[in-house]
Image 1 (cartoon, rainbow, N blue to C red):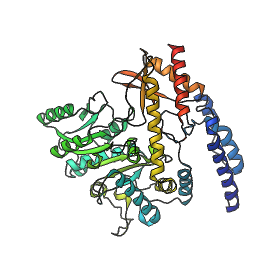
Image 2: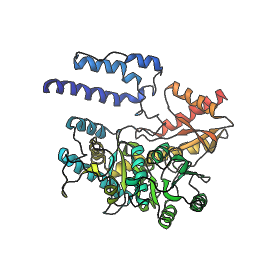
Image 3: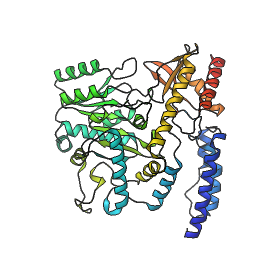
Image 4: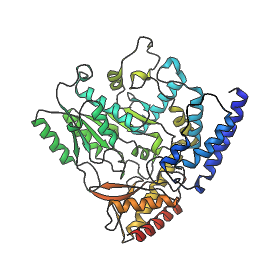
Length: 461
């Protein structure tokens, strides 16, 4: 593809996407998903000869766009996949064209420095000091994996990365933790049997008494308490564990404290919830996903650490074909990945285009939407509010309906195409989970959702 063709097709792509974003609120959120039908659309052998780019675009318009879940629709209230900012979309476009690898300075100097600056902005939001650092990841799963390894190496004085475990290490997590935490302690050798899943209180926060008891019991058994994972905005309810108290316990027991703020980190920009994450600056490491509540396109997660030296002591392995220099920052000694996407550009462009205050206003509006839904449901005897919104997540239960009932109602809402919600189970009880994380959503969308939800529940009860 020569420059002229690239320019022409590029203009068509931008026009296509601009038209899509301008009309997304008029689309059904989900297509009629039939896995066999969708699979058949792409069932073809490897092409041996190329075709015109315009023909490929037409094929995408016929096969891809009609079969996407339109997460940019203002009625999408499901999983935490917000509409991406236009600036972020363009940033990802540019990053793909430049194809820089900030894994090593020599093949991505500007990309490296842009990521360093973006990481510094995120560290500043948390309240970390000048020794802090981190890197952008594919998401919270990779960030939590890095944090689990850091905790293992910290507690073992970096012997575990050389000799493996010489004693049984234990980790302590909330029953509201993200599933990636389980995977992280599996991969890093703790073993899931050595992960203590602790109960939460009525507001879904980790119970300190349960943590203290578990630590005492494990020490009696000759085990080594190593890592505490605090939720700083749980996926289901937005619950925030007592961060300051957990930091004090971690310091006393010489344990690593990791705060999972993959979703909840957005409130660091909020005025309505200013101070909600007080104590997060005391954590050794933090997961924060700009592709969640900072509205960046996928994928853009981050692992941030209070002291950057934790990363280099845990990941500082240099291959002979890459030279190091004190004045050249090398991300490959700060995490798992050596080949890395230029993720910073879309986050950097979003912050530059809209600013922290504007993004913070979007976040506050999402919180107001959750509060609006809470008020609607609280004033309706048919519904029970499972949680009072701390962030933008709210869970509702209808009457005495079981999980199957809630799932059937959610499926009907999805089929109607105007809204998308999910279901979950909290303390053994089913609930609708509704999470407005979209800067396109307005109050009328919340009113419409509640109206349709109530009608569907009444019809199917």
